[in-house]
Length: 390
Image (cartoon, rainbow, N blue to C red; front, side):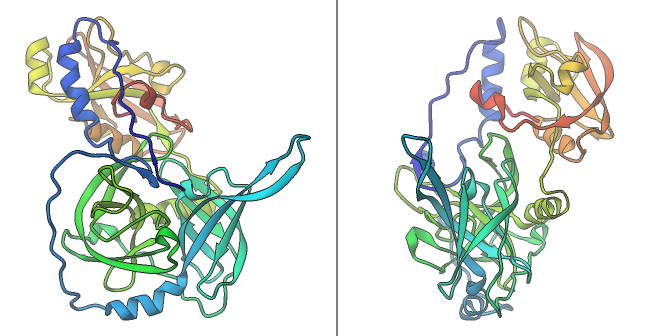
């Protein structure tokens, strides 16, 4: 997908009459990570960039071995759209997006980014030996920007093993293999710069536990593997920060391998991925807000908005209008101190599951049991303000 400017200035409407000054600060906190927008899309961020030092590859495979053994498993992914002429008949095919992917099984399953194949009429895969094959999209998930393809792979291609990303540490060596700027199967070396980042998925929901790396990532790398010194996939490259430039400045993000494993298994089993949804937008409750409004709790998730026909709406939870909305403090057995806690808690449930929610309204503690529904294809809240939305 071509890099493009999508950073837009968001105007936050005054939906909380009488308490805007108390809420605005929280909106900034809640939206602090929202500048990481879906790859291939260029991000402009004004901030100081800490320098990182490259470390030697110890107790692992050499860079040459990793490249020679696993680069043949990295493919070029091309999305093809078939246009229509004046009479509505199909005309010439046109390549609309390119990216990378990698083979994860001997029967030809390939993982790439969802935004690489989104809207494609056909998907073409090019292998290291220059052979090509049309791929079937087995399934995709906009909420994690992941897609699974199926092809008949060339002989002797070694699938890349997917590692446990929970064992990563900042400073670990990382290699990115992809097709940046049309330069097929290029490898760059860097380190894990940070863990636990949050980025936006193509549908506006958030992807958590993301890996930050300084390995060089550029247009066309999207969907390629981030590999450790054992030659295992620890992430799939997805986004970069550019600060107004046209390419890499040393800040890139990869969706963690544990997320990849979960989504791939769901797609293989069900052909799709379902995410549980509560249907609210909110912000953190902090001591300052609690003191100002004499709240009974100093931590929790304040509901700013309840979406129509959502599980929250059906359970009569209330958002903020001329007064503060409900404050969620517990979901099931999980205590909720922040919006991040709430998002994490909801993610542990499946669509259709019932869950007890404890909340405060007008200073009084209450509870309700609601049935979680499937997350919509697009996060409505992103069009309105910088709130987190589980």
